[in-house]
Each structure stands twice: as C-alpha cells, then as structure tokens.
Length: 336
Image (cartoon, rainbow, N blue to C red; front, side):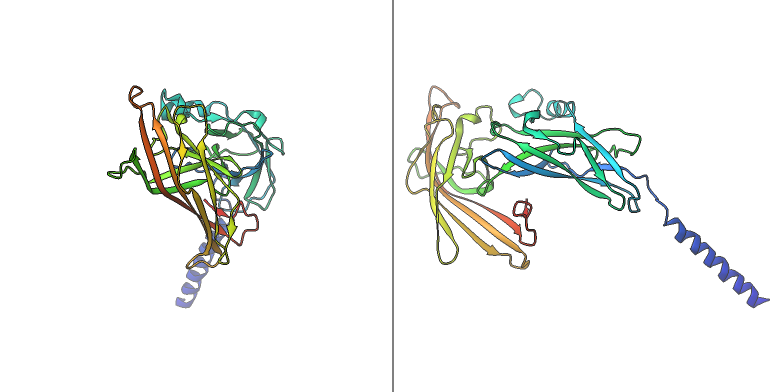
C-alpha cells in the first residue's frame, strides 16, 4: 500500500508539472504593437540621416509586436503623422520661447513608400517602417521633428504607454565632421588679453553641406534668443594623408551670415587632423577622431549694443565616433 501511495503522489506531481508547462505554451500577455523610438533627455527621439547634396535620405523605424510568444499572424500596422502632439510638447517644454520650439517637418520633405502601413509577417516580432526624405531646400538652421503615431485598428492593440505608440523623430543631418565636440581647449579672451579666458565644455557642430558645419561663437549660449547672429561656419578643405593614415588639411572659417555685425574674422593657421585607431578591447570597433584647430575674432553686439566687445577665440575642439566594422552599411555602423 505504501508503494502504491508513493506512486500515486509521483503521478500527481507529474500531472501538475505537465499542466504548468502547457501554460507556457499559451500567450501570457496581451500582444501589443509599439514603435521603437525611446525618448531621450530632450523628450524626443534622435534619428541620424547622412547629408546628401541632392537632399535624399532614408530611415528605418522599428515596429514591435510584444508578448511572450512568437507572433503567429500577419499584422498590418497603420502609421500616420500626428499633427497634435508636437504643439502640446513645445508649449509644455518651452512655454512662450518659440525660438526654441521644434518645427514639424513639412510633408513635401518626406514620404512613406509603403503608404503608411508596416507589414509584420507571422513568425516575426519586429519589422521596420521605411521613411524616405527629400530635404532639398530645407532650412537646416531649425530643429525638425516628424511626429508619428500608430493608428487605432481592430486587428491589433496599441501599446498606449508614453513613448510606445507615438514617436517624435528629431531629424539630425550628419556629415563626416558634424557632432558633439569637446571644446574646453578653446580659450575665449577679451581682445588681445591673455588673462582669465572663458571656456565651454562642449560645442555641437551642425551640418551646412557635405564638407561644412557651423557652431555658435565663443561661449555664446546655444539657447540665447540672439544666437543666430553668432554662427561660425567651418569648411573642411581637401587634406593629405600621411604614411600612418592621418589626414590633415586646411579650414576655412567665416560667418554663416556675412551681413550680420558680428564680424567673424579668422587669423593664424586654422586646420584639422583626422585619424582612425582600433578600439583597445573590441577588435571590431574603430575610433574615428577629428580635431579642429581654430583662431577667430568675433564681436558681441547684443549684450550691450552701445558698447560692443571684441573677443578672440583660439584653441582646439575634438570629437570621436565609434564605427562597428561588422556592419556593412557605414552610416548604420556609427554608434551614436
């Protein structure tokens, strides 16, 4: 009898475990569709598109089916432009500082090749939604956002958590020289003084064309209402490459708007240096370093219009990109 009792207990335990295992074969969560566009520190999702002289470009936005099981059916996710979210976002973030607002990308500058539908086939939990850009004539001085949303449809469930079914795609055009530069090695002096220089930690260099970028002069605050008068353009000239693969070349420094009274004027030897080095521990990663050496004057005409101040900026700024050599598409290989 004791043996029969033990046998019965073992069979009961097996039945329980079998039942539990069967539960894992079923979907444990509601399948929901989402856009993979997590919000950054500024409340938008940054996307990077290489500048092309003809204005063309593209971006692939991941669309996800969540759940504990593999997606078992074909799903057509409908995606459209969300014309309401950006205005609300700007008012909450910047109040009445409209000079800082993000601008919605006008419809003539983008298109959806699949007519606003992302087809996710059975057996896949992720697919990409293609966005084509035609940016010829776009004012690159503004901050452009393409606001998207997943439309409601009875064939699927939206993931309505913040940042999951809506996307604020903040468009960043890039070239080989744009990006965030460490700039604390640039000293800004009043006139010809050599004492008490001012510095800033970083400067964002933004695209003008394939070989030209701009930044704000001296220590000028990037959110100041008068900042557009203080744009310094830097054009990278043709360089030479030495036996170690290091490229050096001249820089042309000038005012983005030659008619403004800032009087940006270069002096001395303005040049750049670019190099490629392997990562110390990751053999598939290359480090692409760009250093620019600048010397220029500019005049502050806005702090006290009756008493303009002439400044002198001199020093170097540097940036580094990590490139994953395992990814064949060079633009996708950049680790932003």
